[in-house]
Image 1 (cartoon, helix red, strand yellow):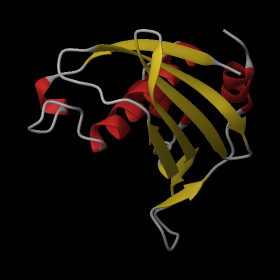
Image 2 (cartoon, rainbow, N blue to C red):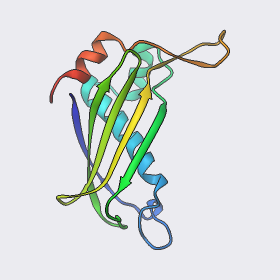
Image 3 (cartoon, helix red, strand yellow):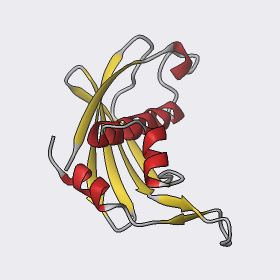
Image 4 (cartoon, rainbow, N blue to C red):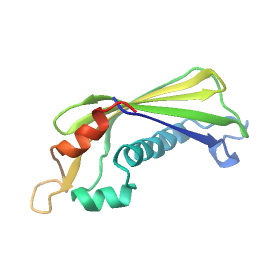
Amino acid sequence: MFVNTMTRLIEWGDCDPAGIVFYPRYFAMFDTATALLFQAALGIDKAAMLARFGIAGFPMVDTRARFLTALSFGATVRIESSVTALGRSSFGIRHALFDGEACAVEGEETRVWTRRDPEGPKPLRAAPIPDEVRACLARSR
């Protein structure tokens, strides 16, 4: 399935007072990496994607991470993100953050392709992932 790679500098604002990444910041990095994976796969940014497919987004419904090594202020990390599963309306993403060649953090997410439902009991509802998107995410890069 599709894989995207990005690099990111660890900023002071990512860190706790000891100068190591505060763990919730990894989940913000995962969110950015997921948006960039879709951008690379579809060739359009997230705002254009939301408009083109008439969706509200793809909220996270499950996430987890394994912290293998601490990352510190000033490090430049490589984040490799890949699609691991494609369901009818949900999909899985795996993230691996590398400090040099060493994997420092592994993360996994399950997200759901959603539309707004102003008349339903909840504001969002799952929607089928369009075939066009499915084809782009299923291909190898």
